[in-house]
Length: 274
Image (cartoon, rainbow, N blue to C red; front, side, top):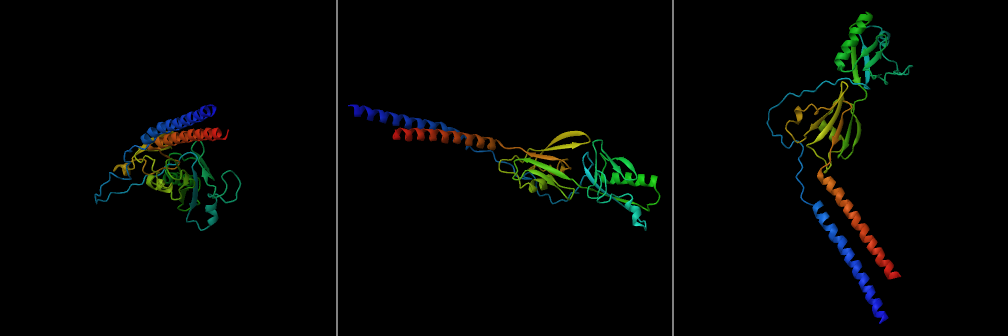
């Protein structure tokens, strides 16, 4: 009689464990199927663009100099003595915070640069051509030695940042001083399957103001957006889809189910052992 009671207790415990396992599975199945429900088809690049056959003029906006930009500025003239030009150019290996031709001229927090033999020049908000004109005018005011001076300006720190649902997010240095948002996303390895192509945000700071633009990469108006051509220091943010959030929820449910099954299995093993 005692053996029968022990055997009955064992059967009862096993039945309880089996019911607990089934309950955990039944609770997990609805969450799994909800997470795997049909998702709305995501737009592709330039999906709304039609082949028109007409050719439109490509307008590339001129970059405006910003605070903390690092500029390479070189001056050349028709002077027969090259040492004259050197008076207005930085020498590599020289002393000072802006020494060295490779160091360039850093635009300070007030938007100014300090140029040799000329002094302080306000550069923020100017294009490279406008700054070059200012430098040439200041040279002609102070010195008549340079014959027909020319000024060549380049950005040394043209960079953008790409965050969010791209395969390789991070900061990118652009040597060509021009990059479109499509090229930038290509450099980042493309948008992942969980990224929203029609709601890409671009954070931009210009003239002391911060602005955020929304870009639809599937729209036929993409090329007319002021954010199609990126500016230095722009931040591109690709937001995740709802599918990404559901996948995270699904993984969390599966982790909990796995933990529950592990606990049930451990209890069953301990019971059989002891």
